[in-house]
Length: 81
Image (cartoon, rainbow, N blue to C red; front, side, top):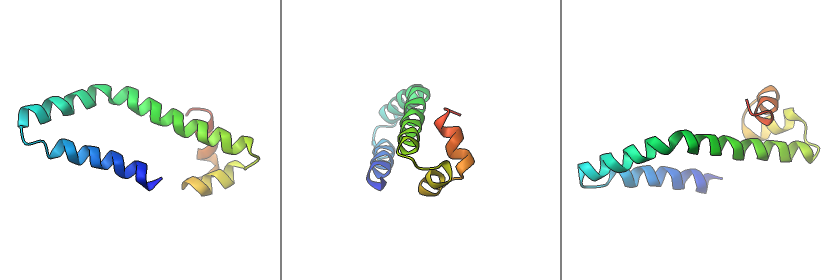
């Protein structure tokens, strides 16, 4: 998991390191325009993972402990909230 998160952080650092300020601003603006869609997709990936774990007979409390939240929150995530 840490590898994927680090890849996103590395992409952000790459934006920050762009020497041309205009290109950096344009690339960052493009990312910000896409962010609502990307954010939704990330949430859907998490939701599907929680659903899969629950279908594998894990309780929401167990899932919450695995993903660093509460069972109640894991249940909410499974419902897309």
